Image (cartoon, rainbow, N blue to C red; front, side, top):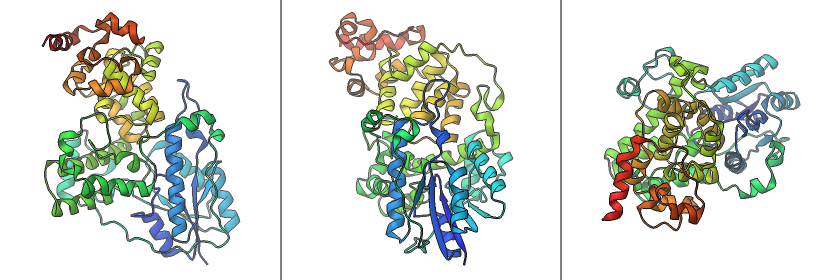
Length: 467
């Protein structure tokens, strides 16, 4: 009698899940477990939790949906509050488990847990399967220590020499252990969140595999918005200007290979164009950051980054917290930060601008901003988040938030997310500090500094008001 345990982490799905598939094919009875890790909710020295309330709620939705889908197959899901170091040894002892099946880890904190568990349970066989990326780690034409420094140098050889693997077969039933039963998701107050905060949290997307698959169908065959992705992806507000697959990829509610399969089907049946190519490109970019993060390890979390750059930051904490709260006085920045705080999501355009302003204008350590995004984003991905911030700090040109606000016609977006400016119905909304009547009316803060490099864009705003 072989009793196995499937340890779910960031693979919260039953479709295209190799660890689940292999466990079901090799074991006579199975236990299923998800462990909420308490360390993920600790309060950082910067004053906020490592994982914020919207991420917590999105996780809860996703885990409970996994539990429901396992139960439909005849399984269960034990949800543990004490973390994997406490729960897995208990389950191994209670059910005489001989093998553990899980998705392979790649980031520092998670790898430390895996190592500690292996040392703690030496008699247990651990089976790990790579499921994070579109291209399997064994199929790319590079070893991890050879991963190139640029995405193009990675992408072109990989796309020519590798192919995404086929998705795993769907399970129709599971041989669950008859004495194991599903448990409830732990309450928010176990992790320091108040009931008010929990009730007020409204993640931008609904979590879970079911919602992920619905979204995939909606964005592709349902609305054919995929056809225009290339030209709409830089917008800031709404659901369908971009795919919104990232929150589901972050927790593994949706596999990259399933997205790829649907895109290829869409190309053959509906339309193949720059947009379909671009969305695959984004998946490959995500792969690249994962492998690049593996190559450089913990360096991606430190101020000097992967090239040990000298510290150039001033770190004014007042400016930092104004940025966090969406109170910098720069509407294009503040609207995005307020959306992030309320919903746990922000467009790519917003992330680029908020990071650029943070690093180059406020001159605050980029790792502080990366930590804040980690706390807030429901699509937080360790490599993508920290390496994107690294790029903004050291590898990419500055973005002018006044120019960007005007270029992308952000008037309605700003009015939606900044209540103090909701009454402004013209282009004054991009530079409210120039107009005392606006500041006096709504109480919107003035910027700490106006930079001369914004002058041309500010003049364009003023000229537009004369037309």
